[in-house]
Length: 93
Image (cartoon, rainbow, N blue to C red):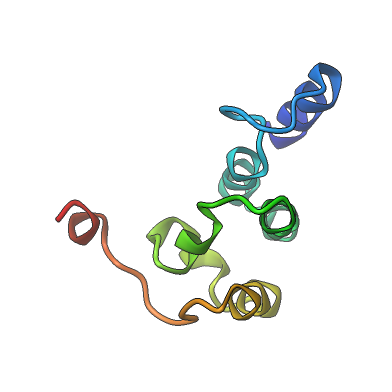
């Protein structure tokens, strides 16, 4: 599925938008278990200054990547906490 989104993104010329931006593609690879490519797309999101990238430090969605050195390095570059996640219930207030 991730490759399909990447192909559509390239064909359309769109860089951002629902499902086309790096933060729309990264979770697709995460769910597929392709953690390296998920991190690649998080890196891309960081490079294009996606405002939601810092939230990867607290969203439980990204828990499978927390022990990855590249993920930890990305968090350090963004100067955000590198440990802990909040539950969905905590996020709702």
